[in-house]
Length: 520
Image (cartoon, helix red, strand yellow):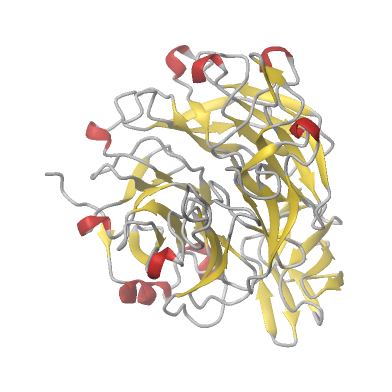
């Protein structure tokens, strides 16, 4: 039997740990009272007519303070092709757009990966089918789209518009776009591209950039190295403070002795120009003790990267890992360390860092009721299970949370479950839910974008901003303009340096969740 090297503690002990400053965010920000015991709330249950089965998708906060998300395409909703919806923090849901509203689904169908809020206030995303592109005798290989907060959708790009789909095809895993510091969007696809040795000949995928107007540039074609040593099936990107992009691949890489048999995945870096470097290949340790086949991308915390694997680790049910700047991987936690996997198993989505410096995430499986969990883990690897799904009768609280978390500017976490809730979605039995989890963290502000030059105007999202009396960038006062109680803009002032943005209101000072990077 393998030794249990990971650390798991009780909820009470973690709450005590949370009260201690952990990481740069907690050390340099004061966010009020220490976190309290978690309060879970079921906000909304899908019923099929308003969408259902949100899968591999996370919510995103808009400039109006509401949350926006996607549902999958399993025959539910107006056209059975997935929908975009808005939900208030208190649980009022509105369907904004139903895909396949145009003949032959030229507007796309099956939204995947989640939405990203652009600096223009609109949302951008991808679909897994539909559109006008064709490849291998099939029509409709997905789109990139823009949608306004009121629900007006515009197709930005049709995948497989180039011969043999060399521009890339749809992405079912990790399809979330990221808007980079140059204003363009960057992302990955699982299918298409110049190399066709994967996915039954339908391509190994690409890394791409695309302008908000739809000008696409292919930066890298996966499986460009023998035996796909460079990886395949990428899981999305994160732009680091060095300006480069980092991510994981589900498959490919140097090692193949893992569950999938198609390669164990890797961590990679890619420059904005397309130069790719492999940083780590999973299953480099005996019995894949270092984890294998990550389904989720990365986050950067204090210059280091954190992520999860779906398989591998001491018990084969996934890990939380850290990768240092020297490309050294450390396993922080092995899931299923507790009896009956009560601590969760098989994490599916990226971690997030909250304003207290703690990392939070979901695992789709395991838990006290074998239906997934929400967990918190310190950067040093101390983990607790904060909530086990299916705790309510008939799983009214939801089950299988394979969507990630988002911390809204009110301090609360929000997420989705694929199943649970209403039992009206035959043959899938239950339709999925939207939930919130409060752990006592106070409100904060979020800048959009998170970097800029002196003289540039940025947007600041938050709550109760209408009576703001001051804005500062790392202590330097800035001019600002209030638009609503959830939005204001500010000009990066002369003399500003990299640091936290603060908004002063009659009820106190709100600080940004991350440092604002002042570019030269």
